[in-house]
Image (cartoon, rainbow, N blue to C red):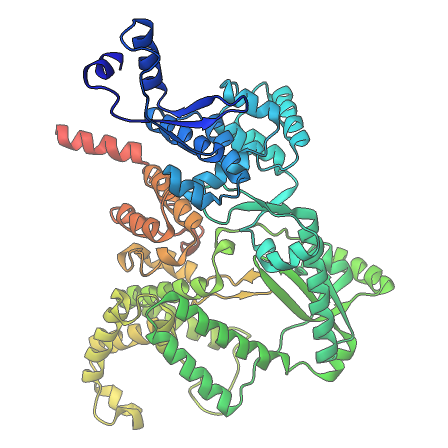
Length: 601
């Protein structure tokens, strides 16, 4: 620098500010000042040499110094924290600081959050004795004293202070802001009750943070109690109760409560017409959001129709129980309370002839009810199509069903000679099925239906003797098609329980494989899962590498990624398979080894 100044002079002025003793401090141009001092010591310039300067205020001097230092060398995080803190103290917003210094506003907010760390921790950060990640974890706690306490406790307990351990220690009494419990209470209600939100500015996701778990649980109970009392008073039930989980038809709940059978919904003519319109609109929707919105209206109508079927006598004897479970409010009406003496009598009776069962969480329990109905409809259509293609087995099943009515004691007589009825559900199945009328199973069924309709004798519907003219092959095809069309295996969820699938036995008997009829895609299945469920599906299929990648993506991208990863597999969700079915899982490592072997061959 001295050589340059000697050759061509000082091309750029220094930036100075006035020090308390009246001297000028150099805020920008330190290397130029050093060059001038060197030239003066070598007698190349004298004390009369004029140096151009620009004098600025102390506040601007700090900003100029920071900008020049940052341009020359990436500043240490501790230096950024101190600099941002000083500028913020002058009244500048994070956005203004970032705009002037070339940083994003979110980065500035994060560093300002770290400015609230205990001075001891900031000193350790400046000496590189702690990392920025450790500081970010500790900054989730606002109290500097507890920050130090957490740091020392973790260090003492584990021998090291990994960021995830520090974060866990800070938030062990809290729940995520994205949890269903917090969302049900609402941030406004939580803060109005004195709750403090601990926002995680260092998360990659917006809106991350934690809240007081104990307070959230208390607010949920208060909200549920209010709702329970409102339902009790508006509908006329004898009593009401709020609790954390729904009543179960097994276990300790049966000692104190008895669940009544839910009455059938009876719709008026206008309501049925409205329902038909909603189902038709739902079938024509193109987005899942619209579909779920319409389903909510349908559920609301069905719930209202069921609720009005409860009788005054039932309401006088029973109550309503409200709970928050599975990310939604559960309302159980028609609940009877068991008196202590009655409980003792019933316990004695149960000991004589009772099978005690324990609820086991099944994979299907994590699937939403709308998706459950859709995929079991898809599965039902596929089983129908597969059974239709095996006429001998289809007819055997039909004859078995007839014999169970004729030869079994449960068979019932009737006033007319034919008492076997086949109910087909094609309209509802295809409207629920994600693939709809483009699905392979539906198209196979409809092609066969059109072929068989063309073979039916003229006037057949009014004269059963016309069927005497049909040949054996046509008769067999008709029996197979009608039997297959009677198959119905749509699953629902009632009182928190998923109904069993009656398709399991038929699938096993005919060697059915769902992947012959259905392939999981983003549109027909994967996008309807949560992101974690997509990751779980890939792991279940043995695509662990793809699962790890999907975990880093947004949900839409993860669904499309999973579609490609699963395309070459025979994977079907575990809850859509018969219990005895075991699908071989090929991991990414094994798949790679197979590819290498093939290439070598």
